[in-house]
Image (cartoon, rainbow, N blue to C red):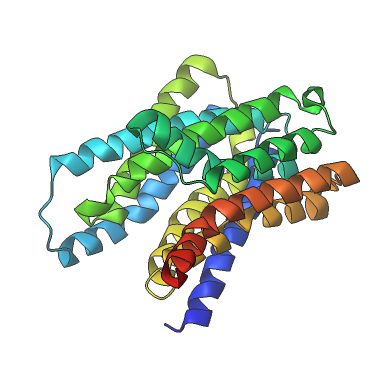
Length: 295
């Protein structure tokens, strides 16, 4: 695959993820967040299972119970993040949800520092400052401008950061599809149990939400994972992360086009600062490497 083709696939994945916020929002008019997460997880796991078998036949690294443990840990972290995010989608706008979720990029090195004592690079701190100012402006210059759903989604970014760190532990096992399939199976099962205990849904509501569930379960989970696996063979990881971060912009576009969610000028300025913060964290390693090579 040529580099341009790989980059376009990554942009397509970012677009699918960005538009997914719209479907996550509209589904909440018909069913509860846990039922949505359960259906999404089980559909994604089912779609990924055949790919996991193909991967198993090709990978030479022996199967390990360590991967199973990490898969379960990733599933628990994903379920926690999804529960906060999806519950927040009930009242949060699609635009705010996209930018606030994207904060996990900035939060990841901070969470890594707190959990593993890995001190962040110097470029992380300006990114954190930009993110906080961006959040303040996104709320209209006051935190009281955020809904309870916005607060939940902002909190979910910390959990997504933990999920990213857990996922990084699965890399040495060389079975990314198997890891993701186990993760979604755990998510679907856990959310199904929570649905039984905490929600009252109707069959009619489930049918009405099915298109949104299918989009997120198939396209936003299984298909995008396949696109990433293909594209990362030709695009460097740092560049890939920058392209994938464009999902925030696609989420904002989806909010405007499908729901008419226009931010005030101060809100767009905040969104721009938050996006700049994520880019700074992602291009920081490249800038540091270039500076080291030129000294």
